[in-house]
Length: 484
Ligand code: G6P
Figure 1 (spheres, protein in one colour):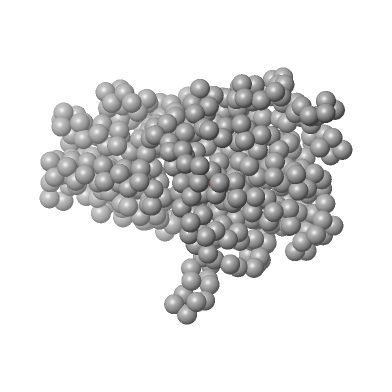
Figure 2: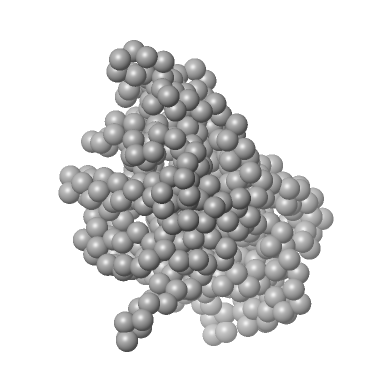
């Protein structure tokens, strides 16, 4: 599909993905040699199949400070590293992206910090990403920008390259305008996003929150999902569409993985190593305050305290993968979770029977599939979550049609998957305790009935469909560059 050139408007790539992270991790050896390896993660898993089919380019940060590296080919795509200095990582990534926007967009679960220097860095870095994308894109190419770290890129890119078709997908929630308007730079963010032709969200509710923000904060007119961009000289404007495109996973891949004999053997081994409990519960999250890990553990501890769960028969495995470790709110969360786990294990554990197996690591997909297969109950108790792909991975792994998904109402996944999961409000600890007990004692027949329904949804709606549907709508939109 794409002509492989490195720059210029007439050569270049027909599909350019712009995301904060590249789908590889870089390491620098002692001798200064730069190496890279594939990195896992939601967005990468979601986009890899599309990119491999389209032979496109991917613009993103390497994950390391000050790393300067030429664009290079990997897995059938051109990877274009964007360099960030140490201070830009502090201000743009840890600061504005993850200590301002992340908490603000997740219902201010943790108070957002507003710093003008962070905003300046965010603008500067967004400009750099826009320039890198402009350089790689062929004439009339499709550029797909991803997530909250890069909300200014659509407008910056349109200013540089009005010939492009620009899509933006917001992987996290878009907050109600009553919260969003706290942001001192709220208008610039909205105008930045409106540089796109199509803006995708996880839920219909996120798209309507955005349209309300447009109405409240700008002079543009809206009609349903269509926003008409007013031009200063009164000439006819562009139209931007804001709509829901709920993301999914590579369901077949997870299903296949979980059917492998080695993975199934590993699942059995995990249960044996845990002391063959009657009920194994599982939590899998980045260690993030949006995930409701403390609420879940508190409920679990109280069930042991009340004697409704017995530590010799039930256990909780909590995988909490390290994340954003330089941000204060994440450091505090880690302390709180680890104190809580220590207290519960000290109080209720017995020799050979830990109440909670807490694992502060990331694991490869094979081990994750084995954990999903081993778990009788999967606990997803986010306080707010754009989608939650872990819930979908659990379902895709369970071709045996067993296992119970306990799912927070505050996830995008709940909008899509209900009925099927046991829905919970993680703020309601008593309610959550009852649901956990229901899940732990659910008959296999009822598990099968629910899991079948969930699998019909997840196996049918995979990530390939998601990207096809987003790109399909984007490329079908009328393109009126002359009005830009
Ligand atoms: C969320 C975001 C992604 C982000 C990922 C990991 O899923 O939506 O954009 O890449 O978390 O976070 P990190 O800060 O490590 O990239």
